[in-house]
Image 1: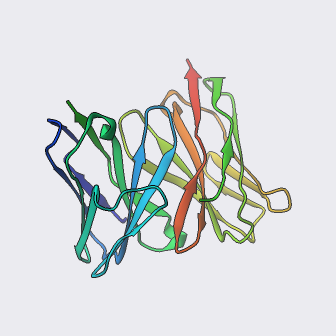
Image 2: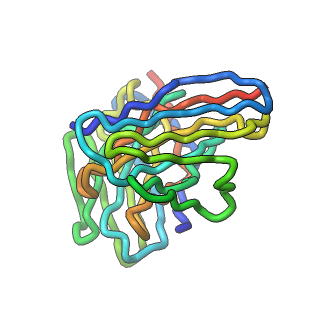
Length: 115
Length: 110
């Protein structure tokens, strides 16, 4: 089946530094990937839609300069949290769709802690 | 985004059935999904239902869809301890985006 690999699983960084999270579709090509953020005991909030070869589409209220998305190939999208602050600490999850009838396959998530 | 409503917590004894409910807002959604999330993990697709179906059964899982009321439910038969998790319903909308419910935590008591 469709597999999405996300790395790293967790990362701790200092305030002011940048962190890159990778999302790879392992056995299928994904022209579109999605990035979500999840706070503890809350639902997933869609941050942006990552489009291969073009600019990402950000949801309302998400700072595109803060959360840089690059989708340079059909199997890789990256999310870079720039100049991270403690309020950026969260669980970030990516997903890709093999086809709507197959649902959306999710990565295992990245726990970001900014200290 | 779209608004998907779910209740929050369900406790069930092992071997009993669990029912989780969800309401959604976008009547044009073509697919509705149920996902399972275990602590610290990503989401696992459990099942989905196409919008022109009323019911779908997949082993221990039964999905019921009431399109008129925009109501979706998931029944887990013979609930097992491994079913303890948070369950999210989701609908697809606009450019294949997904809108998630708040999630329902299911705790299975041995």
